[in-house]
Length: 274
Image 1 (cartoon, rainbow, N blue to C red):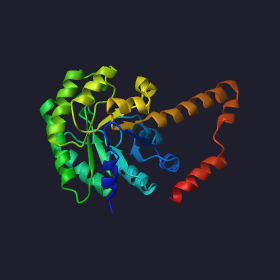
Image 2: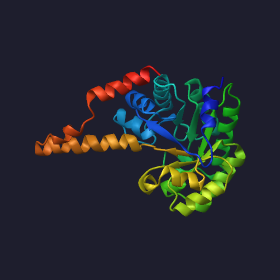
Image 3: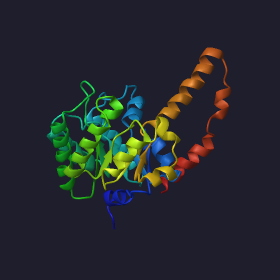
Image 4: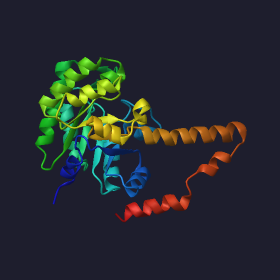
């Protein structure tokens, strides 16, 4: 019988992308499970919101892993952790985060090359050493574990596509299982990323990349489509817009668009029986 990490790994097929459905709490995990998701991802932004905190660097490793462990317990699906920069600058911190992630029941995780102290990207050599350490820790685990290396400098405005490709190629050589550079400037740049490796490539379906279909991503050779904080932000928008109408205008009509309680409860019960 395959372990959960191997099950997760087998979903990663270039040209046949699955959706990594990022959940932000137990309810969203169970609903996504009941609706047919193949795998669940955590989202640092969505989790932070549930704690009343902003994203990026405000959640501790203990908080993130406790949250991930709760998500794992709420679904039979593989769960991948959005573990930011690994909660430490040193390669050893990344390795320890990978070990703890596996102990929490995660089937994989992603690690960024962003220094949370100033949101700058780590120096190239340190960025690569951090990925090497994470890969070594993942390979030393008793079960399979999908380690995703992220080059976030394009999204953060720290570097261009050429530097992203340089880093991703180095992460590939270091042994990362899946590569990820969120928000390249153009589809052409995304294609360069996909063509630069034989490894699976993750795409973040937000902004202009949310307008592209799964079929089009498949044609490009994408292996995984993550939603990031997208679903969490959809709920945030509904909350903010409805509350503004109610509190500012005394208009309660947005509540008419609410999901019927019986439908949500049926999905929660269905997930519990999986």
